[in-house]
Image (cartoon, rainbow, N blue to C red; front, side, top):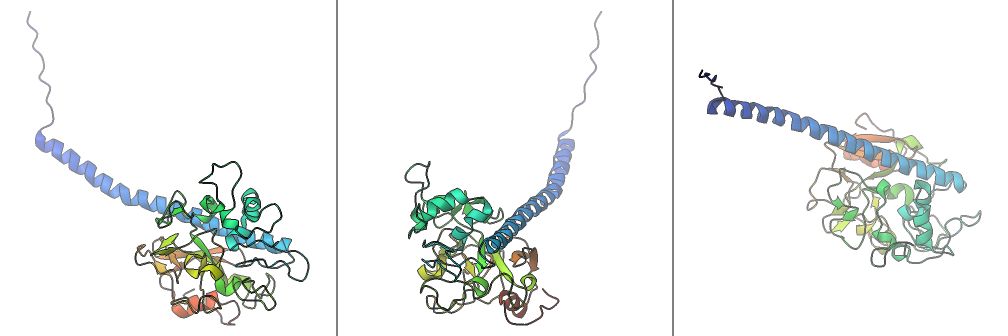
Length: 311
């Protein structure tokens, strides 16, 4: 007996193309949603990093009689109530290492006697020579996932030399020169309890690209006396070493390219927003609609102005 096989009907070419088109449309709809979720996660991670920096400032102040960390130490060692920094030379983000659970890296930087004059070049124990300098180490708390100018911790224009930071301190808050300091030290004239405009109205940290044009943000860099172009600082005005920085009080740049990035300003890779850490330890997003006047008032710790509604 001959069995008749039932003919199985397949897709026609037109039907197959229709199915492919539908899948392509669905993927096109899905990708923006995935990107939004990724950016939201990156922004949350970035916000948490700024929160950690804010807590580090407060923990430092609790340890050192309400004093604020120096923007640049350069051997400054006393605030009138005993040893404060040791005699090491280092920038703000070196000083904060013990307060973000990086004390081993801090100890390697300052040396056994706490007086290392080359903190950035100090060797970290247990790491092979050639890659063991402090400046070559990644500090995750200093990196924003949205900062596309940083790869594996390296600033895009400093690969092999210096690891980067996505965050900078407000020089108007921390870099004012207190009378009687060492010539090259930048120590705030305020402490955590006497900021005239209040801790909730003054920016402590803001975002900056790790690589900005031919300059950048190098977390282990010793500070402004060595060159503001590589220092982790925003709002750097006129001082004995800079001679005045263009655009220091200009509003942030929102999603600039690396080539068009201006290291004199803050900038962020987040869509239409830059994150800032305030001196009370809180974090907030500043929108691209902020005025230059409002931004300036938020940077200045003692201008006496009330921040308007676009803050």
